[in-house]
Length: 322
Image (spheres, helix red, strand yellow):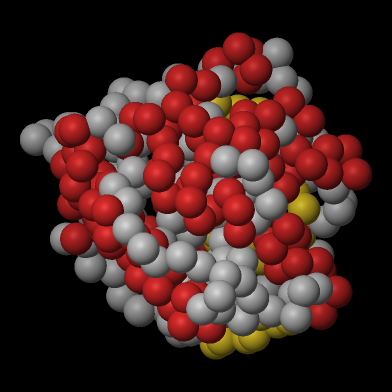
């Protein structure tokens, strides 16, 4: 598909990438969603918590949150309201350890945890009457979504109509380096604080499997992923994890219409997070690169952010053509 010329224009004074990234996370107020929680089992005797907003529609959007997020993040709530207004039921799933309760197994979650997304989708397709499924992912959840679709290729369940993803670190290595730069230290410090806390949770349950010596000195994704993410999830080191789990390896095989929106001024993204070459000749991948938007930002002055309107528009176009 050709590169899409974006319609997004940032409001006056809000075009800066850092403003776009920070304000929606700390200043946006979105009304609560009437979630009903369902806990489902995973094949390895763990659990995933799903938050469901079902009103008897025949179609459902599955929302995947970003790193250290959950189903009550403002961007998840905003998207849930926007899609519900357009006639979708909504399910927001929480990655392992992100629903307010530590998960049971030694592993937790990471950017490549498409197996857990697969568990969620398989459960919804088997246990619910929805005829149409759309996937919507943000940041880490967007990477999981693209990886999930690429792994299945043309064999993806025909009820999965398409996907929309925002602010996706398709190139995990480049994004990890970018976030390690001095101007992004505020984001890195926040991520490291909560990730270190998750390691401490794990150490309480598995005291012989995790070494906490020097944990407080871990300051970057490379240090954290080398020491914890990689060994806990079967990777050699951080580089091996980033290489094998970055969705850039999988997007070529995606077999359903998929929109990837990555802002040009996203302070988290670099390198092949902007796969213009792949999108140019891809049958299903639509790439949109707004000049502004930051990381999971896309602010508009109103109840509904541009990203929510854009997702609704893309999915409605797919539904109409189908």
